Length: 424
Image (cartoon, rainbow, N blue to C red):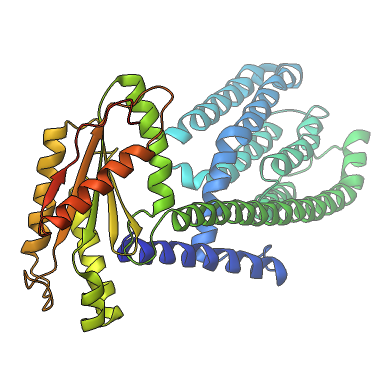
């Protein structure tokens, strides 16, 4: 794993932990019921919009259906104006229903709450307008219907106590002004007198209902916000654990010095590729390489510079592992192993020679080497795996070819004799 990847991983983990700490502090300080910091509040609003589309629209549709069904009263109490009253009710219902259906498909969705408040208020205005067109005692039916409108407002705005309070107070204030403005008949019947006498209690009951509705919606919003924070916190914790699990797995299979795979990882890959090549009857190639005169390099330049040399060579080797199945690993000390599944022997030999030449071309100064630069010796071995065999002999043959390259003067590639199934 490269230093850039390691730094990116650290940044990711730091970001996750920062978010977790912020959410935990909100819960610990009991601040989850207030407005969140801007980014969290934005996510919370997005969550509410999802809930609005999946749940609240169904409640709104049901409420509009009930509002339309109660239009039978327009014909029952409206007399000659019954058809007009019902037509207005039906038109308002149709427009609001159409708005509810189209809202999720428009850019106005973020404004769903104020639009809902406006829709409820419009329905209450329709009821007040009906009062002016119906004679007593039928007119008092529409007065009573203001309470179900308040209940519907509670159901539709249950998760936003601010919108709940604004909508309720608008309806109550408008109704109070309407009642004060609307003239009583000159000759009052017993029903008119009774209605006038209970009007203060009716308004008081409505005020109490509004207070209860606002408190209930406040409690629901508080619970919703707390649940949102806790669920978000749990999701981030799960994400962090999953990320740490991946990082732990990466660290256990990555060489800490060079950032490429370690011996454990490539041996696991050898088992997997052996089976795959056995099934497909394709060749499996291993390339063993060793840094020439590396002990002398360390003794002369120091171990710190030796680490720099190994990192540079590991990086260069990894550039030649281009296919998904190709793997290079630090096998131990200054020794590296390359796995090339499904690669023809001639192709693998050409890749090894290119690696050998590229490392020499890096011109990493090595005063104690006959070549005066850091070089590598490489051994290549290839086999078409058998069904019940293992890779140990393949590694052994590559190692033997490596020692042959060293014996021939180093800075070169040697190909092991073809590994037969009997050898394996």
